[in-house]
Image (tube, rainbow, N blue to C red):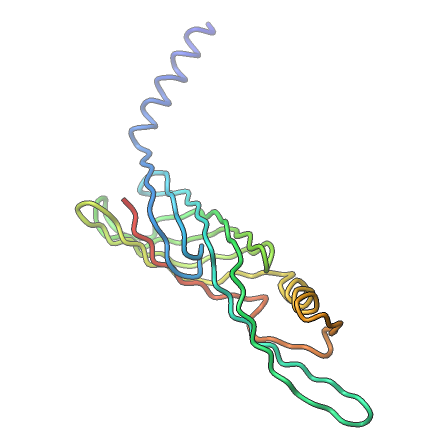
Amino acid sequence: MQKVSLILIVLSLLGLSSLIKAQIGVNFGTEYGFGIVAQAGSEEIKLEAGGGINPLLVVWRITTIGFGVSSDDTEIKLYFPGVIGARLNLKLSGEEDENRLGLKLGINYNTTLRTGYGGGLAYDMIGKKNRIVISGGVMVFPKADDELLDRLNEDEGTSFTQDEVSAFLLDIQPFVGLSIIW
């Protein structure tokens, strides 16, 4: 009985492997940064993983009040955090071997913003030798404000609080990506 079960498992894995394609490519943009991306799965459902270096521009508005006088300063910081992430890509439309619209849901870990969750849309343009994937969406990084404030204070040797500092689009990060997959 165990041999029969083992044979059935092996045969089903062999049959499943003919439905699953794995591909790798390069990525440009803010989804996984400048790096690599890999996809595995069927036309209906794909699992995607990527990683790279993701430039992050933060414009801080710093308000200080002392001795009855307030001042506003602007501090611009450019960070280059590492990013890794995974997405589930569900097919919304398109026939097999044709251009495809998909829904992406996933998670990212950014060495500066920490863990983020979100999703968006991806459009696969199928070519003869490769695919071009254009994607866009939104990631929510719940602890980004605190992490970046700690980083600003560490970099500048200051002790600003949340009341003194503000920045735009830290917790909610729009993303765009362009991937070329072989």
